[in-house]
Image (cartoon, rainbow, N blue to C red; front, side):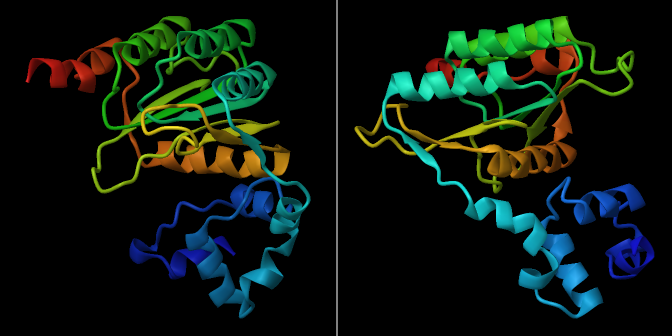
Length: 233
């Protein structure tokens, strides 16, 4: 199967491995849209047939609307505090100190928790830049003492790539949405269950794979905080 996928990939190297295919078959990971298209070509079957086992879990639960600051904050903190295997956070605009501190505490308390932070452009607030520095003080991305890399920080430089915002663990996820009350407020979102959260974990891993690594204090230090830049321009 890997050979068949490689034959249909420009350059002949898709990056797909036998273990990755096994994960798709066993429903341990969701197959991306690009690979779904290739597999449909190989098998001559529509995605509704080939990936029904991956998609059926998404039909079982409904998102929960979070329509206030306390609700949104509680859901974000619960997602962080409930993470045991993996925690993915996307976006460059975080500024809630309690939320960022909870992420740091989760990494301190659970050494094997794998954390991904993917930014879309430089941080918008100094508190997020400071948070990145603290993450690097807590964990060394080059460390493999637990058998795997446990801190992954990346930045998407492409201005044409839309920024994504979510926080996801293997148990739940929270996705902020435009405020239901005012233009400036950050007080609305949706809470998702285990099946949807697992998809967002894969989303985050793929985003990190395509991002530029910023995994040293020096790399973080040269990032220019957006709000600071606006204030001095």
